Image (cartoon, rainbow, N blue to C red; front, top):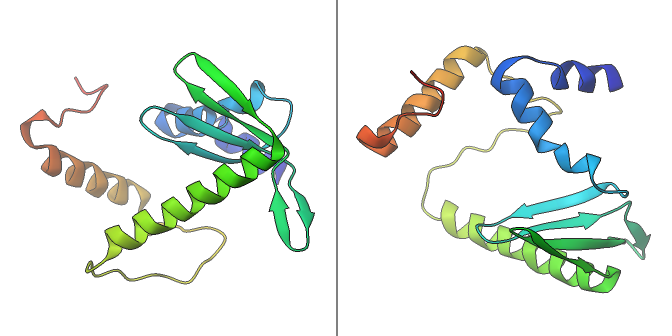
Length: 141
């Protein structure tokens, strides 16, 4: 499995850059990250490995970052905030889905696209259509 991670991290172009940027925080923290919630003003990270007691996982701590400032969370504060954020995600997604025709697929380890390039092009076109004339992606000439 490690070789598969390394192959993805070594990919050239935007895929490799995105994989690397997603885990960049691993370099700065001693403990592994359990969860990360990124808002417009705050970045909240929870540290593991989780301590499991009576079927409940408790993070060992966490951080709230705001621009160039941060505060450390003790395990109980981290557990409480993580619980609230997870509930908020569920509520936001449930509200967003309401009335939208959605087709959930069976969960599998890898969610392949029959044609990745075509799927990426379709996603880019949807974004451009949504943004209208202002939708020029960074890096386009």
